[in-house]
Image 1 (cartoon, rainbow, N blue to C red):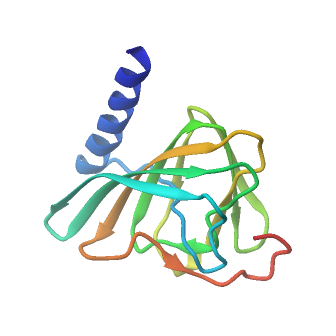
Image 2: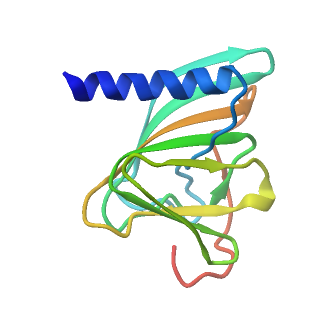
Length: 150
């Protein structure tokens, strides 16, 4: 009961933060490189306010899998419910390791190509709030920028 209540509070808090204009951030799978086997995403809710779509989605990355290289046309905020997400930018350098309970922010634009990887031994579960221009895709595929990993 407490876990469900906590999860719902986190989701409501992420949604409220974005609607109120608080900027936080997150990852979503893409298939350019492609996303690994078993990577999944489920849309929990979607609403449009003015010219922005607010989409709450849960993403699961099995151990050893990744989101694929991608970027977003809007800002994302993610909350790590389970596992540890390793995040890399287009320079192939780690730009963050996010453990259970962490928030991650991903800025908008093609200059922010990135990949999320699960280098651990338990699934990574993320709650991700996308704040996108109305009608935009959840993510835009991008080629591997030359890194020796996918």
